[in-house]
Length: 147
Ligand code: RB5
Image (cartoon, rainbow, N blue to C red):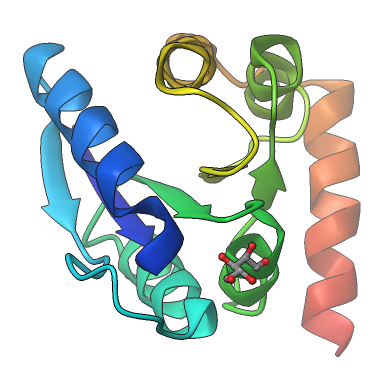
């Protein structure tokens, strides 16, 4: 499985830690983030992650900025993307099981690296439950289709 990972300047170190963690777990990693700590604009990287997932170039995406908010908002502007900011593992897991999230976002200024790994692991290990949740996700995607 291929994971696209994107980040702004605030999250270079955490991106590298998470990318290594993913590789250790056997995932292929597509680095779409900046590798420089010079100030840059998070929408660029949110869009890159969103497009990689929406096009099928990657199976899932991880987006990291200072809070996770800006980069998730940008990723969510790409059609087909359901990006969720998760600062703890429970929400991350449920965002897969119930919301079929396809991009996980979190903040390098919010979570430490060990918590970030737990968030990523719970998210990747969870599976979408379908059923009534499929209907609700379809309703979300219908809002997007009507725009
Ligand atoms: C950059 O300073 C910061 O605004 C950005 O990383 C992110 O937190 C935005 O949502």
